[in-house]
Image (cartoon, rainbow, N blue to C red; front, side):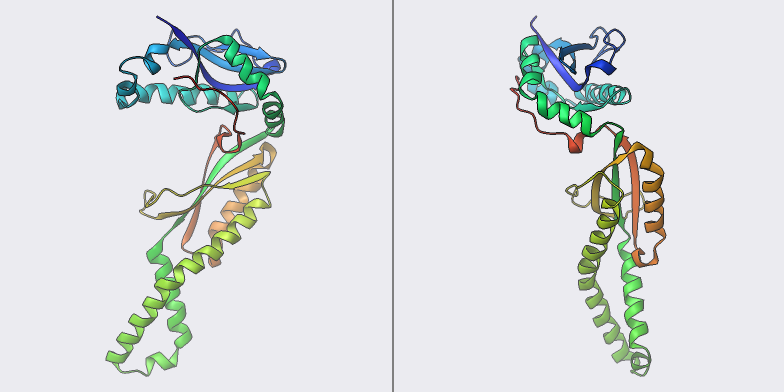
Length: 269
């Protein structure tokens, strides 16, 4: 049965002990280093047939088959990231020979080495903003009603009802522009405490456990020493009455997928 080199990540050669890396996607598949200068590709040997042979497409679409392997892929990268700056790669990157792994490192050496140096002593975190739409709608409605003041209270019940319906319709239209302005403000505050900030595309109709809507999603790269500063900044934003209706949630740290450079490589399937 032919084998392939399965790539997990690339890291700093001098910081990783190749004799104690553990196993790859399964027991019996030890992790090994393929090195070029200061770089080390962390790989393991896998059956090429599993990923490229007859029935491979069916296996890759089988949740029971792929889930434990995808989870182990992420776990290996997390373990290496805790030891040294790491450039993670996506699930299922295969090479037919050791020389092809070496060629990957050689052809991308400068980009990889620069990235590993850039993320040294830094961590990637995810910051998501969730909107309580009903809460915001009520807040904006009350603000408009209070602004109308005596004028609204002097109307007859029927006219007042229709006027309030009109105000509510105006509030619905106002939410989008309100949200754009607040998200820009939040992003500006996060930029001030980050080495890099990247806006991610939102998953449509994504909600948290309280049914609040995901309206912004950032990856933030920060100095490890600045974690407390970042955490305090997020807490202040969550207590800011001007941002009422929005809640920021922090998760991580994660391997720096969001900031990794694209590599020139031949992916063999």
